[in-house]
Length: 418
Image 1 (cartoon, one colour):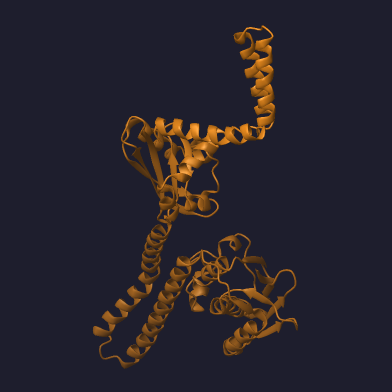
Image 2 (cartoon, rainbow, N blue to C red):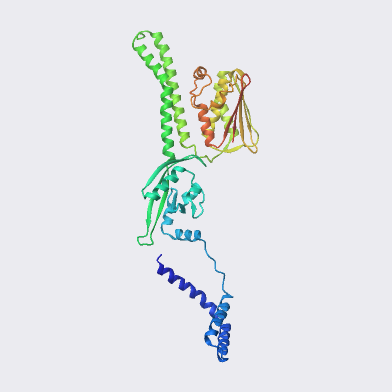
């Protein structure tokens, strides 16, 4: 705004405020004029009367005047920023944007920035709200040189996120009163980084786990093409082993794909209501043939009242199928697997086997990908080493916890707490 406009607006406000007071105090003002006239007739010089009359008039006008409130500089800056036609445009952006002045104070933040980082008080210093030395150094360099800069920045709280942070100078106004501000933008690339990490993990895990079965298949094929070309008995044996290896690779790829899909949507909590009682009954019935083969009994205990949790039914079925199937396979010696559901303040499902248990040093790591307490036992039971990793990722998405307690010779207890 130009200086002439400020003067004109101030004059308008002054007269708009003064005229009603003159009208309201016209009686006293008229009396003051009469008193001044009488004083002049009494022989007092008019120049001596005039100052006293001005003071009297000012006192009369001031007695009904409202108190003058001086707006702090920060409020003025806020109004000026909000009145800027660019403010609604910045608020419409889905990326966080901070407008920084040359003295490193934040003069504006858009709605996305307020949602991501909380409310930043007007005219507070950027260093008081942004703790990253890299971002602060970048902003200071741009303020000093006027050059555009950007860096990649990772946030840990309230959730893990990766941003490309860019700062660029912007000149406002073309005349002498124009000033320079700096636009600090945060472009969220968390999803792209997550996909890249998922792709690299998938390739590394798949290549590691598929190497052995592929080498076996290649050896069997070469044997069947060579020495065992006419050996019918060897062919039947090798074809059976090859079928097992191919089936194992198929399960492995399915589990890796399932794990990748879960990682991709791990930050999105499901919102369907699922009754855990019927779900656990369905899992027990589906695993009954396996339990029968292993000579294991699955004992299910559920309350009479429904126990609802927020979740995805198919994913929760996969969780409890994994836990109960593992209990049947690895706790086979105990002959029974106990599954218990409790409700109340917190829903909890407990899966207990009475097998050999897990040594204490292995318990913290059994939910890692491809971590096996006993590699040969796991492969002989057709495990891929990904079951508990899948369980952990599903429960993370459901905002639930997996608690594991095990004693060697006494069995293992898995608790899922919602």
